[in-house]
Length: 162
Image (cartoon, rainbow, N blue to C red):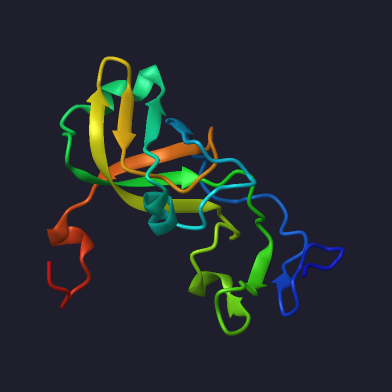
């Protein structure tokens, strides 16, 4: 149960952090998903279980950057969870045994609400700047930040079998 400040027992918020001092980000498009605040899956695994593909609508100025992508290819999608809290330092999710630091969790509530999912391209329409992927765990209209190819030679940690 959350208190009047929106915190669960054991959670710690930072307070006023002042203006961001880092780089500016460019939104490259929007995610089109069937999800809203009431029914969004908590992670990409749960989104896949529901069997709903997502469409990455890329702004026309960035559409040429899609060349070289292929159906069946795994990609990493980075997106901005624009409705998530940015002040939580310690969180108390219901699925773990006690409060944990934000950097030990995959929660969207973090200082920079960047999320990522590794997904598979199921359809491409380069002319329209649309990439359909197997699933995505974010609200419809979530800002997209980047798409990167997933490469076993780069993305698997050392000592992990591919």
